[in-house]
Image (cartoon, rainbow, N blue to C red):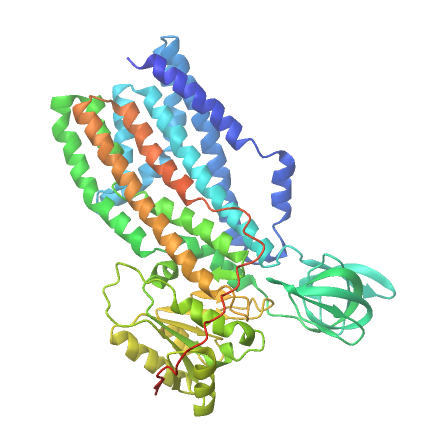
Length: 563
């Protein structure tokens, strides 16, 4: 029937899979392993589970390649015994799918894993060994692809957060000794040269060097005897001996939060999974009812549909892409859901300390103007006007910032609890509030707001409960947060709709063009891979985010809201 087609296709996929997944040399893999720093050792159970998952994915990929080779050989040589030899290997690959299907059935639920397990069982019973082995290879390849995106995210976070350099040279008895950062204490003298990242706050005791803060490469300064250098700075040229004054809080917790962020659900991923769950029983029923009419081969095409259930894999993959991309700009995304909520924001409240920061003042007016020009979502049914306000501690401070920066108004609240109550009141009134603060006296307000942004120095990588961390007091990346939100929502919408469109094409071609199961399997994975390709973000971002435009000169005084 389809021996020639499946032989050619299977051979191409086998060769392509070997080429794609062996492209990285052993040297690159050893380099990746070298990046597992002392930081990772603090959570050994999680690291062990991750290593086990990676090992299983590699094993499944090799096993599926062997299974496809045996199945194609058996079909080409007309030796069914050889083809049957591929079944144990193929079933090993799908063992987790059968486990998930069994748990779903015990819970009296039919989901996408039940469809997959039923489809594989049909192939085994009917002797469709080539189709089953091809399905196994595509399944294992996609799983390996998604796990590789998680590996890339970990590597990107290590690089962008400065966690790769976990060793430093410390002067001890006139010689330099390489010492783990966890053992460095205040009072020690550390030697730093061009290209090094400064891991601590300290004072120069000898030498001189030019340095720049992370994510602020245009702010270059020279450090000489007695000058302070903040943690997170990068030595551009020269060499200094730095007496350690303060060791910043470890970044283990924040790194772990970012690493687990892709697994959190978003609004669109929840819609996709719910839709797939509701459609799965109907697809099982369609398969059972159409089998006497169309035959098992064509009827099994209903078992390849997902109708949105693919979001449980596509949404984490897309989140990995965006979290890694944003981290290069000093934007740390703890909640992918925040990117979808950012499109609904119609009110931004700044803590006055954020706008009064010396680094932010020269850019604040242009930033406020750029945010005011930000287009609102066309799906937002709210009729409330978009507004930008400041939360001040005094009348003079609020009035000054509102006048100088062109804000829509200001509020005077000094206590965190009262600020949270104010934010909650606006949200109960229909507003979607984005609170931009520091997390010092306004942690309660940040926890209350639907979207919260924690503004910090690049060296501050301590734990936070904010949805997004902005490692740039100049606020240069804040407009980029909303740009990323629009792009993320667009890609998530594609992830939801593209596979559903492919499912509809699959059903149509099965019913009207008499396509069989092998084409349905290929169409299903084509929809999945098209979404993966569409969600891909550049590995290397531009050197710096664009600066906010300068505000226009107002022709008349704007009215202010004073509370």
